[in-house]
Image 1 (tube, one colour):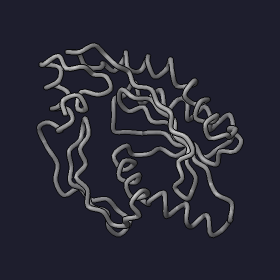
Image 2 (cartoon, rainbow, N blue to C red):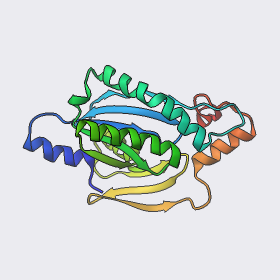
Image 3 (spheres, rainbow, N blue to C red):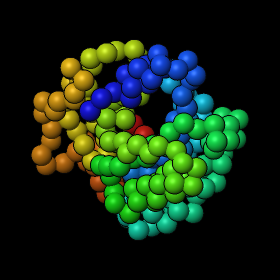
Amino acid sequence: FISPKKIYQKRSCMSQKKKIALGIEGSANKIGVGIMDSEGNILSNPRKTFITPPGTGFMPKETADHHRDNVLEILQKALDEAKLKISDIDVICYTKGPGMGPPLSVGALVARTLSVMHKKPLVGVNHCIAHIEMGRVCTNIDHPTVLYVSGGNTQVIAYSNRRYRIFGETIDMAVGNLLDRFARILNISNDPAPGYNIE
């Protein structure tokens, strides 16, 4: 894996124009569209979360239906907040995985459609790596070691020599999944998120 930041830096040297990326994320119960430039400036980042009643989780089909119902509105909101048109976008990105299949397919379909309709390059992004890359952009750290904790993954990951390496991970249950299950047993609200309400 080559860091998007490095790709942007290399391309920026060739052409002084800032590159603008639009990314669609829908790997779980949140659908979002982010727009950022090649200098790491976030131009917009609207999102909407599928909230289920306390004591329940979110199922793949219902989550995908939620994403399908909201993604175009969120896409337009992202462009409006960034004060851009789709023609201003240089590359379309989408979460390729890991995540829940049906919700992921919604973001992938919209991204592919935009790419074909507007003749923009398409980049599939690893969800876990994207979280780490956001941290690298915000902190300017080149070679982080990360404890990555999410709904489906708990891993110790290090970045070195343009590659991510997993040094350890849970093999039974991810910490985020554990918190979600605990919240369901105790009927803790899913709004805005079970882990947040547990804290």
